View 1 (tube, rainbow, N blue to C red):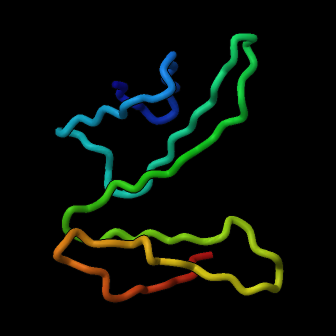
View 2 (cartoon, rainbow, N blue to C red):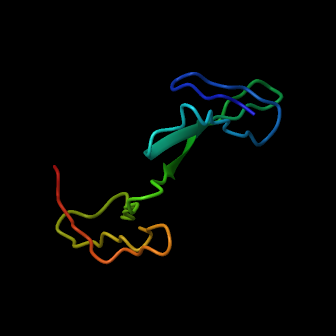
Length: 101
């Protein structure tokens, strides 16, 4: 178990770690990124790998966009909102898309 603080690494000998969340101050609703760097017995460090998790709202639906990381200039691409969800019995019935930049 570990209490994560943004920007502060936590080193373990185990390959897994529980993210301990205080119910009185939970992670805010939305996206959170975690990073892992591993080291070998010679002292070499890996390049970092990252994962993004989404803390869901228990009332409002949760929007999740899947899209290619890169696209070729002049080529069309698809934004996919199928992973969006609502807590049952609610269901997502519309998608409102906006280009921000």
